[in-house]
Image 1: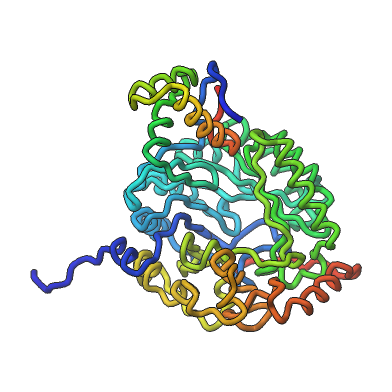
Image 2: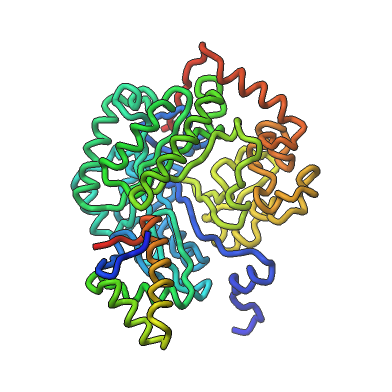
Length: 92
Length: 378
């Protein structure tokens, strides 16, 4: 599953970002799962506010990181889509 | 005062010893439970109410767990709703940043209590299912009217909007209900379902003849789960624990003994897994005497089966040893009489053929009756 340009990704109830001070990393806490995040994953999740469309999220990330929009859309789409398959992220 | 003794940095100690911090803690708040499932994982000798840790003890342990690196807290039992301080415990766990998961039969949860748990910050509920209709569920759970109340609780959970996992234990008597259990998870709005074929620890060990699935049932369950994973991708996550007596290789022991999780029993005894007390050679520490970090990094029970120094052949030279760690230590104890032996589920175990024969005999025993779990002595 990958989000379409107009989809609005959402961090649903029961899923939250947590700074793991013991391991020095950000994690996404979800039912029965703790997903370790690298800086890119963390940056993508920070853009998800339940209002922005996926196209907007990708554009903001491309600008912030000075990366090609096409590449960012593919990578962020795969990341978000993978978490949607696991019922950790949803589409509003 | 200068006595040269500083506070030990347990994280640094863990790094030095090559021991990772635990991710999950199972807090068995009580062994009391209105149900008496014949596969209960609690030990045969149940902790009495008077031996249970108090609220302040648990609050301190939750703080120590978070400091140690635990992220996920599973509040279990027995029935955790049997603890009158459950709401306070959830609030305390959230205050120290733990992800709080309530593992419950639903019995003892009123609409008001669920609202209080919501306000306290409970993150997730795992609701057990003993059967997909009242006749089956109440017979297996040994509690008349339990199914009806559970369905009411499921409705309240959905109304509040708690993320829900339906957790079903399947065995020869109810395995045919698996497709309906998956439908029920969807109807309840669950995000996940745990499909666990009964594992033979605790009270289940004496119920093998009554609950052992047939080989055909075990295969059918695997097929149903595989099909549902494809059909329901993105709608329902299926976690699956196969029937290991019918498997060729053993299950991963706790994801590695003393590497990912720990259990705290109702009386404060800290265990590497819920069945560890069945291994008589181990001695256990309690949170009444020591801090959780000291127990995790230095406790003799936790260090007993870390790494592979303890392994015998055929595990020691096996290429799978880093994958399944030689299987379940408690099962090696129960079936081979030696906790360091190869789990007899493994085809490389000299006891495997004999176990397969016994498994067939258990599965074909038409006479065996269920023995329900007992209750803690008052």
